[in-house]
Length: 136
Ligand code: DGP
Image (tube, rainbow, N blue to C red; front, side, top):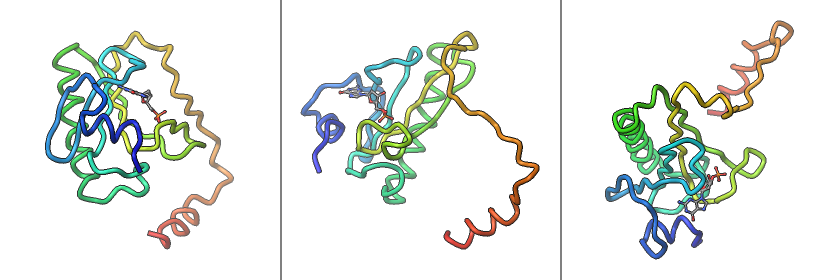
């Protein structure tokens, strides 16, 4: 598997690098949903969080924390969304695991993440939790 982020990880395609270590690379997202929007990727290919090995997963999230704190320090972000789309139905467009670090500034209401809560009073949440837990 050799996708665009594999090429960026190897340095074959240029990127605006924010952080790098043996396991991960963090670079600015071309789309800049807000100022400083950064992607963290593992250098070893995985499609998304669902198939990433635990060692790399840990390093990706450690780097995500570093980047998030750096965005707060650098640009005065007051919050941050850390998210990862897995598979096409969830909006994934590049099929190499990546975590979005999207700094928030309190004035970017236009960034609507689209979560809408449902009334769960008629749902058996306890039974659902038990069903899911059986598959972990
Ligand atoms: P997603 O939809 O979650 O798969 O996000 C993919 C992101 O990757 C999207 O926000 C745009 C960004 N992107 C795509 N191609 C490139 C690229 O060549 N360079 C950089 N820096 N970002 C890219």
